[in-house]
Structure formats: structure tokens, C-alpha cells
Image 1 (cartoon, rainbow, N blue to C red):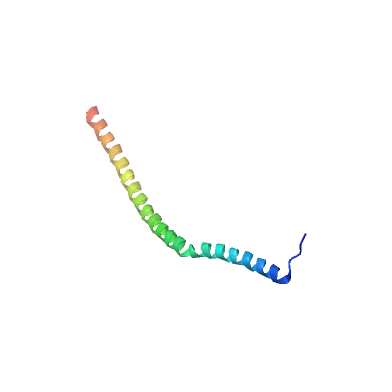
Image 2: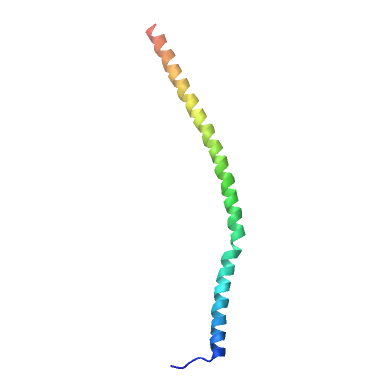
Length: 79
């Protein structure tokens, strides 16, 4: 097996490091896009929470109204 000279080792190591740096750079360059997406998701989730609260309030109100109507109908039928 042939040994590499110091210069050849440095060159190979430099190429390996450059490849790794390129890969790291690609990942790091995506961070601003990811941060923007996360911020948008936070806004969307907040809006969804408000919508769910409104839906719960409407369902609760409808449930009360149905119970009230059932009581009135029962009272009218009994009369």
C-alpha cells in the first residue's frame, strides 16, 4: 500500500473539510426559512385556539337551548 505525502494528506483533508463545510452551510442556510415557517405556525395555532374556543361556546349554548326546548315541549305536552 502506498503512503501519502504530507502535502497529499493535507489536500485530501482539505477536500473532506470543504465537503463537510458545504453540507453544514446548506443546513444553516435553511434556518431563516424554518424560523419564518415556525413563526407562521405559531400564529396559525393561536388563531385556531381562538376558533376552538368560539366553537366550544356555540356548542355549549346550543346544548343549553336544546335542553330548554325539550323542557318546554315536555311541559306543553303534559298540559
